[in-house]
Image (cartoon, rainbow, N blue to C red):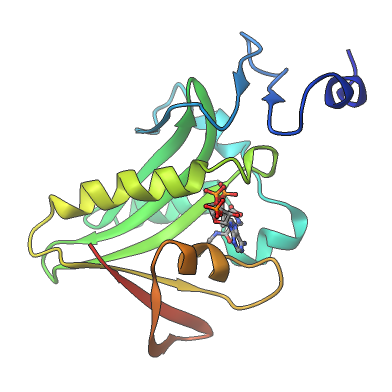
Length: 175
Ligand SMILES: CC(C)(COP(=O)(O)OP(=O)(O)OC[C@H]1O[C@@H](n2cnc3c(N)ncnc32)[C@H](O)[C@@H]1OP(=O)(O)O)[C@@H](O)C(=O)NCCC(=O)NCCS
């Protein structure tokens, strides 16, 4: 069955992952979980991609996991799943020594965006950070620009601190 036929048959909010062994369907009601990246799911996580226009806003997952290897003390990363389908990736700079918690990476594959998965993944991340020493706020920085994540973070309650991190705007949110 071609992709074109699939979009005619089902509403846009339902996406069938035909590459998945079980041909699973994810939708707005799918259960979002954060799971460890393992040697079993690594290739699936590497295969997740944002749109070409969004690629300037986030590193590839290969790059993020390589960086995590060299920053093992602070890099806390997870795959984002919707039901049993990997749909995204996040990485936190989890620095208990400074009591500073910074969203380092976040991406949802282009096929699975606008279904609420990033918002739910952020709520799960906030729950994790609340368990960390001295955690009162969470930080993020973003590259400004068209189709960038500014509006997404604003909707989640982040506000600018007034500082920049290089070319990136720094935002914070109470936990
Ligand atoms: C930003 C990103 C993670 C959002 O993922 P998503 O799963 O599509 O987001 P959600 O569906 O959970 O959206 C939650 C809400 O934010 C809104 N939203 C999502 N992306 C938005 C954007 N770029 N601008 C404004 N609002 C946005 C949604 O409309 C939704 O609003 P609602 O709650 O009123 O319905 C995704 O677009 C992405 O991977 N972008 C490329 C990588 C990137 O920029 N990462 C951030 C690096 S700092």
